[in-house]
Amino acid sequence: MDWHPLRLTAPIKSHVFGGRAIVERLGRCPAPSGRIAETWEVSDVDGEVARVEGGPLAGRTLRSLATGHPGELVGRGWRGDRFPVLTKFIDASGPLPVHLHADDADARRLEGAPHGKTEAWHILDAPPGATALAGVRPGVGADDLRDALVRGDFDAVMRRLPVRSGETLYVPAGTLHSFGPDTLVYEIEQTSDVQQSAMPHRMEDGSRLDDAEWHRNLDLLIAEWKPGPRPDFQPGLRIAVTDDVERVICTAGPYFALERWRAAAGAAMRLPLPTAKILTNVGAPVQVAAGGPPETLATARTLLLPAALREARISGPADVLVGYLPDLETDIRAPLAAAGHGPQAIRALGDLA
Image (cartoon, rainbow, N blue to C red; front, side, top):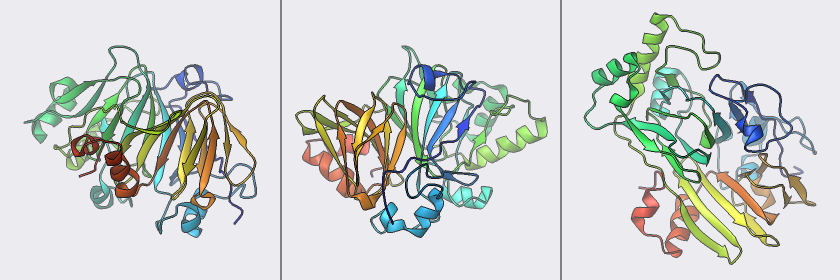
């Protein structure tokens, strides 16, 4: 295989909560007119499987590369039925529906889907006073929760958390949640689209559900709800790579890790690729070299870097997000401990028990 950094098709969703922030505040260009709620940067979700754009692998699906060449694409002996990590930009110009995602067991048992969805949100932009709903208050039972959801009285039963740019929230599957309005997020998650909404309308177009369908959705939501998780936003843990290159581990768990790397002007950032890494640019355009001559990664655009490339070099100034399927000991615990971070702070990043 002639491996190279992969530019992938990125489905765009125009759900009712979206606006133009991904274009106007983040700087994505070109972009279609109209409302943009989500761009799926790397997707192997059924019905939204990305294809390679350009280069010798043009036209190949991500699914075919992940299943046909798992060692070269994902690395580390990984095997699976689809690429394991999904990433998105989300513009919550309006509030997202209050909803949750099944865990793996409930996805198979109740949804007929192969995988559930744990996710994390990295806040790119939010105004002072912005909040999110994440998890249910202690002592709330299923009957109380259902009654509050029917009334739309979410604050009676859910935790409301302050939102600040640069922080990250790890959201275990089964956790009831929402964020927005006026909040711009980069989301990383399991490759799955299972979800159950508490709302009496469809998020795609705002049309009203009939009462029977709405109440069936609520029944399934309650069946998939996990009362225990009460996650909190974290600022991430810093590792000084060199004097002019910084690595911040934002969140981590068995399904994904997300890091934010920054490099000063003139610095050379070396990104090892023991596994595939999703490189998303949230700063000015940067030069990326991996397995060939340098190429430009524009603002708010993404490359998938196959493990077969072994290393990518990024020229500063740079501000990029890096998502991947981690070896938690090698990639997360050991380097953070070596940088002086304690066990409690490391565990707070996500699911690192």
